[in-house]
Amino acid sequence: MNRRKFSFHRLALVAAMCAAVFLGITAVARVAETAAISCESLIGMALSNAKITSAKTVAAGAFVQPGGGGGAGGAGGGANAFRTLPSFCRVEATLTPSSDSDIKIELWLPSTGWNGKFQAVGNGGWAGSIPYPAIAQALAGGFAGAGTDTGHTGNNANFALGHPEKMIDLGYRSIHEMTVQSKVIINALYGSPAKLSYYNGCSQGGRQGLAEAQRYPEDFNGIIAGASAVNQMRMHAARTALNIVVNKDAGSVIPRTKYEMIHNAAVKACDELDGVKDGVIENPTMCKFDYAALLCKGSDAADCLTQGQVESAKAMTSPIKDPKTGKVLFEGHLMVGSELSWATLGGPQPLNLAISGIQNVVFQDRTWDYHNMNFAADLDRAGKSDGGATETNDPNLKKFFDHGGKLLMYHGWSDPQVNPLNSVLYYNDVVKTVGKSKAANSIALFMVPGMNHCSGGPGTDTFDKMQVIQDWVEKGKTPTRIVASHATGGKVDKTRPLCPFGQVAKYNGSGDTNDAANFACKPESMNVR
Image (cartoon, rainbow, N blue to C red; front, side):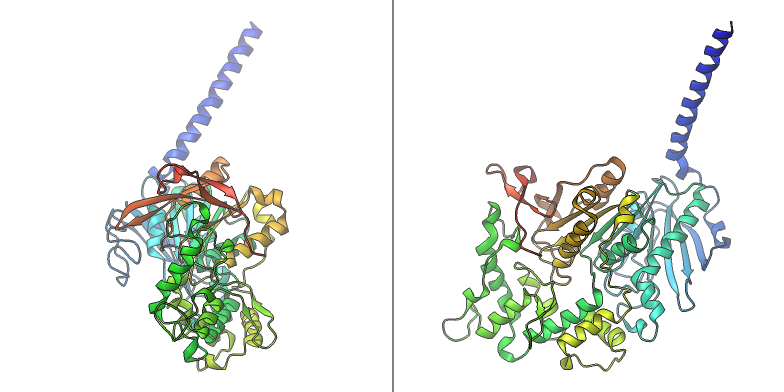
């Protein structure tokens, strides 16, 4: 009798445990269906060094971007980017972690269908505005999404003059503080914390993502960092120095009308190294094309380069050096294949983003004239000018990796603005610092052939980054091949596998050359440090 009673109770206990597990899973699945409190009641919520200024429910498809920002679709979002959004709780807040901080953030929380996850998004340029299209994309994916203006308005560095705390906000503090406060608000609204947190950014946003991994390793489970602008202030000085070199005299200037001719020659020389002719150089580091091959045999002409133009072409794809000693001052440079967009850094004047930074941060003088630049002294000065706020080059990511953090990096080989070697050199330094074994399942770099800055260009520039990072974090699927696509007129006309750094996509020898299924990732040398 006692034995039967014991068995009965044992079965009952097992049944109860199974029921509890089932109910727990169901509760997680339905957590977004019933908020713990109303959206509007968040307005009175107490936060540390932060204040919620607005909390309102936005009906499905009703959001209109403040100030227009490219119409209903927002910048880069397309005409229906906001109109197709589900209903959400829009929270606006101001964060004041320092006496000179005025960080605006927005957190969008799905009214129903929350996937239980948080996604922070990054900025571009000098930031200075809320990245609405990126937040909208996060929301559309079921995430509670957040973005920030990083503490100032305007896509320039004018805010930084006399305000070192605001440079810290831009450099790393704003994203961290936004993340901390967002998690508190999420927990309050849903009555449950976000089970996983992700970050997604490119350019300035890529650098912001690396800053998170370096400085706040517990903030995110997965980070996507594209075209990361590490060593930002030194890079701004290098960009300016390059512009001076390629415009040093009239004979050195390469007319825009020659860009296509130069590009076609480079592609003709190196296009088929991957086994297929498709107008894209798969691995520019192995391209041996010499711009001197285009030297005019006689006078200047549309289909050749003068000696000065040859020197400028080589400068566009070479490290910045001290003109007196030949010492390398900045390792990164553009790659062969980027010629169509050389006007970004090689136009008549330096990039405005760079000049604004040097004037306001490096010299703290808005009258500073770039023509007076001293390469060696000013690049060093630039690198030290913001106290390391935007340097973001610490390769020791052990703490981030130790708690299971995953870092997915990507960069277009044809990026004409943030040189591709920025990502390559940083990735190599991380692997060297933490060791190949730990790096193998913690960090991955995918260089995108033919892609420009963050997107665009003749390469396959579209791929589901968020799905890749989620599969890695949640299912343990280390990315070894990512299928990407290229579209013309909104219609996909080519797919191709993106391969981890150290491998390239090689044609198998049969089948449609526009189909990723007919390519394999194979090891190949990368001629960089």
